[in-house]
Image 1 (cartoon, rainbow, N blue to C red):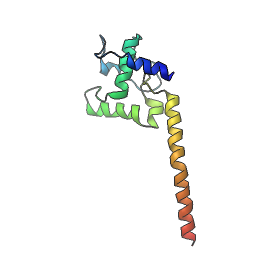
Image 2: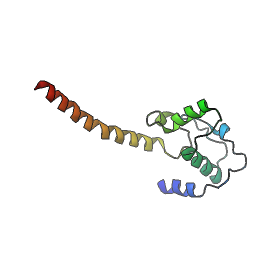
Image 3: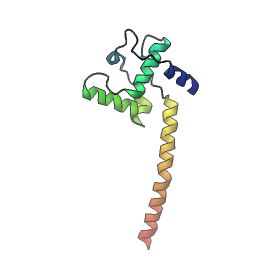
Image 4: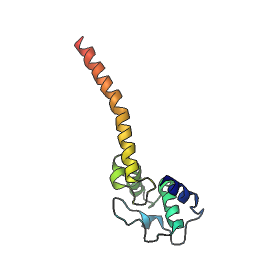
Amino acid sequence: EKAKKAAAAAMAPEKPPLGYNKHELMAIGCCNCSSERRDAAFVAYLQKDLASSYYWAGSWCMDFVFFICNWHPLIGMFLCHPAHPWSKMERLGTFIFSVGLSFFPAALLAISAKDDTLN
């Protein structure tokens, strides 16, 4: 699947395909409403934009909310764009890894602090 994504990103055209309107393509959540067009160039360009573009609607508030829905580690698992290049499972794996990575040092600090207060 990663090879598929890399190939799709490599074939993304330099210019937007005909009929490409970023504002109309804004979608969040689990709906399958990413676009009605399914040709490879269109989807590849959309995925490239989802991974690298922050300007979508022209309104800073809407763009900020869309950014949070696509980039926040926890919120993104539920509200990212349906065509985002990072799958829900990749996001879940990253979240579990980051929680695990921060949980153990925090637990060691808590145990250390508890031992210091007892002495």
